[in-house]
Length: 184
Image 1: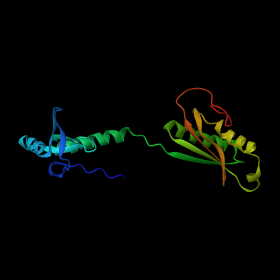
Image 2 (image 1 turned 90 degrees about the horizontal axis):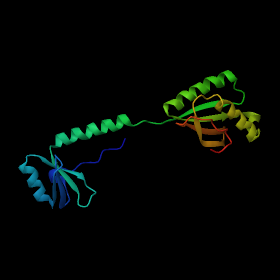
Image 3 (image 1 turned 180 degrees about the vertical axis):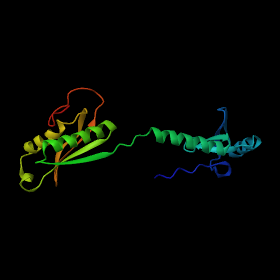
Image 4 (image 1 turned 30 degrees about the vertical axis):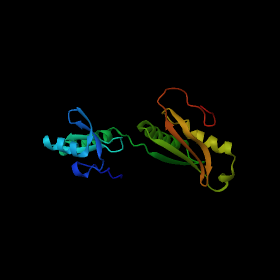
């Protein structure tokens, strides 16, 4: 987890000139650090460096405890709105039965509905490793035809040491899914 940036307050501020704003949004203009500290002190509030990378840096006159509360509240709301997308894996073999493919397709559909990407691996063993690529794509096509959600192919089927791998993700639009080899 990323450590939050340290916020400079009062004497910790290093900039010699600051653009000062009050708690209620009033712009006091550009002033020296000492003038800004005295303005904050006269109001019995803190001087908080809001935007240290601006030219000149922006500082706000407000209560530091209130500022921390607002920051935590904002962080909580952005965290609640964030949706973490995972890449889920499903493995199939050339000889997987239709019933088992149906169960795996149902699971893949549920993952797609939740917004996750799904990596479908065609696991090849023995002689199956030397079968033609069109045969292997047909085997992958068996499961993709059973998936109920609309999806698009994020990564085309490609060979890896264990077999053939493709990645699919959900599309928001209704319509017919393209066959595996076709371009959208």
